[in-house]
Image (cartoon, rainbow, N blue to C red; front, side, top):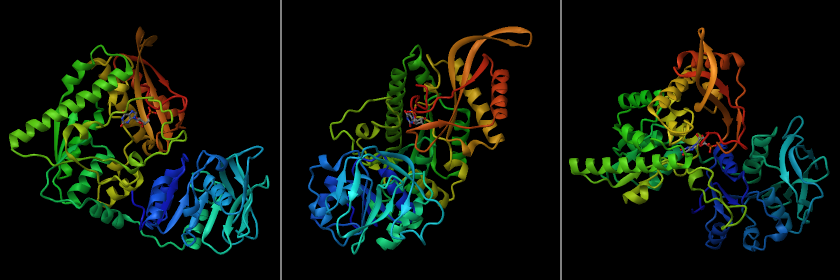
Amino acid sequence: MNWQNFAVGIIDFGSQYTQLLARRMRELGLSSVIIPYEDALAQIEKKQLPKAIILSGGPHSVFLDNRNFKSLFALKNIPMLGVCYGMQLMAHHNGGKVEKGEVGEYGHTELFSQDNFYAEKLQGDVSVWMSHFDQVKSVGNDFKVILKSPKNVIAGFQHNTLPWLAYQFHAEVDHGTHNREFLEYFCFEVAKLKPDWDIDSMLEDIKARINFDPKKKVLCAFSGGVDSLVAAVIAQKVLGADPYCFYVDTGLQRIQDAEHIKTLQTNLGLKIEVVDASQLFLDRLANVAEPEQKRKIIGHTFIEVFEQKVHQFESEKGIKFDYLLQGTLYPDVIESVSPHGKDGPSVTIKSHHNVGGLPERMHLELLEPLRFLFKDEVRRIGLSLDLPRQWLFRHPFPGPALGVRIMGDVSVERLRMVREADHILYQEMLEHNLYDSIWQAFTVFLPVKTVGVKGDERAYEEVICVRLVNSFDGMTAKISQVPFPFLEKVSSRIANEVKGITRVVYDITSKPPGTIEWE
Ligand code: XMP
């Protein structure tokens, strides 16, 4: 990715917060791009530079990092912000001293301003988020210390003449009292950047990057989720394409999904065709209980059905598709810098299914209008294109759908139970005005029989589990704090209205150690 002409180029040293830096810059109206250090070096050599550079945090220690930083720190006139590891790097290579700390600083920390740094800028007590072990012990002669922590650790410094600044803390995270002000200080006062990123420039950027020829034929594996929806509407309204969208009905969808697709078919002016493959999915899933095997069957069957439909369609209509439209987002394509290096260990927790695998098989060029955008930007664009809020702020829903919300074998009867329970949960969330404050909500079918009473009769029936979580990006999650009367209502309705269910339980597991889905 070329970072020339971006307002902010972020060099990724492997921090878990690097993506947040890019998002925060965009929230300030500044175009931002993340690139690995090796790519940054290559572009510095070619003098292709962004207007400002941020050095991200990272898990390394400056003592063990033998890479060459000369050309980076020779960029005297480029505004630079060092964050955490990036600050230590700036100190270490510019006359300062970094040492191993005796104890690290983690979590909330108060800050004290040196040299009146924030007499005007920041009012009240200042708290920031720290996560570091090594410490900057002294700064070079050309720098002044501007912030310290209560342990007398240097928490920020600034160059006396160059537009260089450094923070030991993470002003890009959610915790902290004055994060925005800290970032604004760098962007607008030190770097003197001008906002260049809004809805219009995002759309301009998409058009310029893609340079679409409207004569080309576009195919889309449409799910009705936010990403494929906005991608299809952009393709239509911004790029001038007329995409053909196939929605594969796997028989594993929720009641509200079928309704949603119908609404989109009637209201969008897009060609959306439903391909009913529910029986095939059910047949293939019969007697399969192992979660990974279920995921693989659903994934392969989806691709097979989609491909077959497309070939049939092409031969019937006598056309040939040129592009496969996908709602790929920026976080999917940022080349992640593993804390363990290029060959570091990685573990498959779950084999995720979307439409991965389709592009390679179909030999189509990819059309990815959202490739450079974060989810919140996609939603903003959606709103600007007049898509209703409730379409853009739906909860995430996994590709394998209810298939991974039925523990054990999938059957028509179990699908009915989980589907009805899920719909009751959905209706009650809307009724109690809770939908928008919960990040993801669903029910899971548990094939465990328990004893209950229904009327005066003994019941010996199965269990539905309710899972409600709040999360930022699905990587970690907490259980949602919802009122008990709401849970009581959901439980009572499920046990009374869903035939075959007597007991409802509430999952109180965070992620980690649990994952959000049960399979
Ligand atoms: P886990 O269960 O891994 O889920 O904590 C994190 C988020 O990802 C969703 N999820 C999926 N999304 N294809 C998807 O598109 C999948 O195969 C898949 N599996 C899990 C899950 O619903 C949660 O939002």
